[in-house]
Length: 256
Image (cartoon, rainbow, N blue to C red):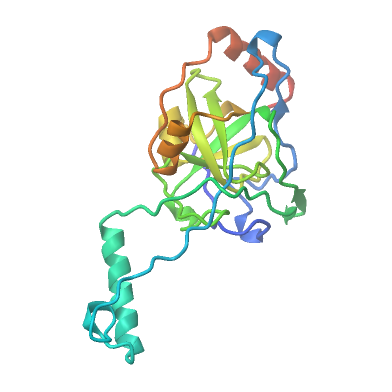
């Protein structure tokens, strides 16, 4: 199956964000897990949020002159100098740091007639399908961060931005920690849209979609920091075979 992609990111509620790989748009959010007591995880704490990073401030040179010695009275050369700096930074692969504060929840928004209401959900624990998207989706995420396809991030329709979740493949049991910083997907049964980097780490990039469990968590700060820097968090233990069988049965009984 081909991977699922989105065409544009940005503010919630834009019609351009609709699609996510299918024409079947419903409000079905997935399957709530009713796992045995041994597989529940009580005491989950909500994740944090993202702060807008202020624009960079460039140094000024002496003698009343601006960047590269260009006088401030010449706006066009100065603009060209700023563009040159931006291109150099992009070529160098520089990364602009992101923050987890403040939390962005957002207002209700509508995509193709379906209204989504973002809200905190500390006990979020759902079964459904994951898809993934790449660099063709745009340059910015819904909370204003630069989209990094190789980062371990994801999109979710309603959880606060950002939120940290564990995503478990119901096929292999592999579990990874992911930072949600975007909105989507908007397709029936799909509950999370992974970045290419997250899809590769979970092992679903080739398949395009896969059944998963998504559980909200509050990981250690060192893991949060690694994800904010675009690096994978520490490895998680694989889910036991008995839990995978139970979750797959729940998903099947729910019609997915």
